[in-house]
Length: 128
Length: 394
Ligand SMILES: Cc1ncc(COP(=O)(O)O)c(C=O)c1O
Ligand code: FES
Image (tube, rainbow over all chains, first blue to last red; front, side):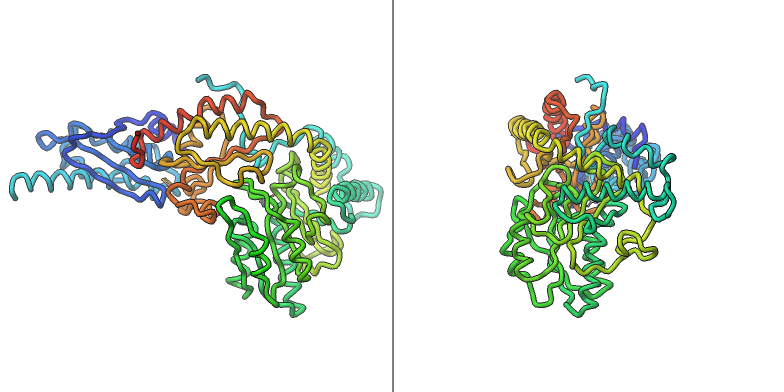
């Protein structure tokens, strides 16, 4: 099993690591018992993701996909970010070993969950 | 931290470099003395002689007869031959179909037992272990039934290094007249292998774990032990394992085993000292780290840990980037979804078992190697924890 150079770059120097204390939306995916858990925090202004951070417990692929996925949606509108697929993340990383597909599926899902969380909070706020 | 010029190899439980003296001993048997050991002419006789000398060398170390040594293609084959060979022979004689083994065996034993259960109608008891991965001989005694036909317990565990009370278990097996096998693949080259002291009837070894070549192993089978050959064909190895013998490999195995035991005392004490330095250093410098396996009854070269809140493969990748070769029983690093069955059997929760790291020392390691690991490992663990959602920094 070998990781691409892009995977290794994002693993060794992950972008957007951390927590946003006053996040507008939070998404969590995975289960530590299975060896992977991912948390995504987003800050939203005018329906656009202006800041994003993640924390991940998992293998090299899990960390690299978290990093790449957050890069891919940073600055994007929520509608654009919702279009992000796990496949697109894997492609942007130059591919992933087949046995790693399951954990690399988490990042895009966690982003979608964070967006759903934002929308839910926002609608509640508007009294909808 | 500068990456050192050479790699620091700390995965000797996975495999070892072939000792140059072993390579030299093997060399003539490739292109010069290439005869088939079954042939009658001098070239064949030369090969047969080399093989019989090797068999004698091994037998002297095991304190057994040369005829009791069967050369095989690896440790896995030795384990398969021991289990299937005895199980089928015993059942054929109407002795029963119950096998006793442990929950922490290498897959060469574990998966073989599972197949014997699933497809061949044997019943297998997998004995539990304590928090140190130690088997209780009393559990073996209690598990014995009238129809028990074989007991197999590994001499030392490959993941956490725990050394099992083989002689005690052997005594119990003998009292009940049940053939007793030990997978001594990890013990070979360091622990005493006197088959009479250990009271074993079968014992597996693999050359590549003690600075010999890959692809050659052996199985000791005590005279009188029922064994049905698993690989049938020509009459090699006294009808017990067909196939033209790997003469160079066999010479390599014997040479490596002899070198290992000629220098076992000094190597073991030097490596044990390094191991202790490594274990103490890791536990002192890294919070929420735990030694896995027995604190003292462990292989001289084995230091294994779990680190909370992080995953093993990501530790390995960071170590590799700094030139350190290590291994982990984490699911992610093995490509399976389950963390190590050994760590789980010891009662370590799965989310913690994912953060396992095994460092196994060898002859070429130095104190500088240990110091370098102690210098870089805490930073790697800290970096990964800082990005883990499970970690709350105090
Ligand atoms: C305890 C144990 N048994 C068996 C084996 C299998 O040996 P081989 O690689 O020679 O098939 C190994 C090697 O990983 C081992 O550690
Ligand atoms: S997190 Fe387990 S394989 Fe990626």
